[in-house]
Length: 132
Image (cartoon, rainbow, N blue to C red; front, side, top):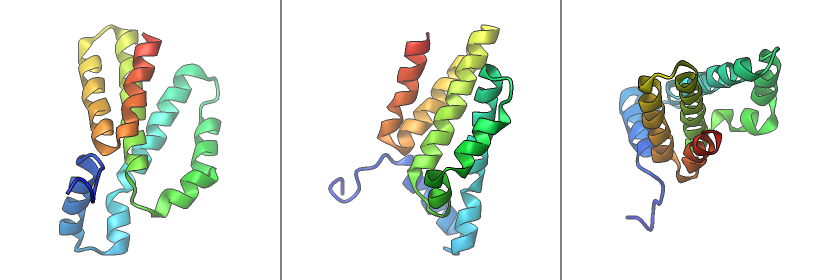
């Protein structure tokens, strides 16, 4: 089976649950995965708000870039892992600001979810280690 599908298990499992709930309707499937796009936008805004005076502009630029717009109608694990990774970075930064271990543990769990969507999401924990 590994020769057929070499991706981590979280995205296919969530895809199977969404298929079961929506009955495979194309628009319902896209709506089922819309919260991950919204989470990515909110996470980007939270990151930009931490480092920039005008945080909305970079978020709008990312959301309007061709790679995001063209991929918005596709169900790929990339955006899901990116959403988890960005939220994990936000949680880590919040934890380092407040010096609260709950934020660190939550960030670690969300980063693990990102890596369970796509192996390339290992870049998020590496970013945290470089920042620390």
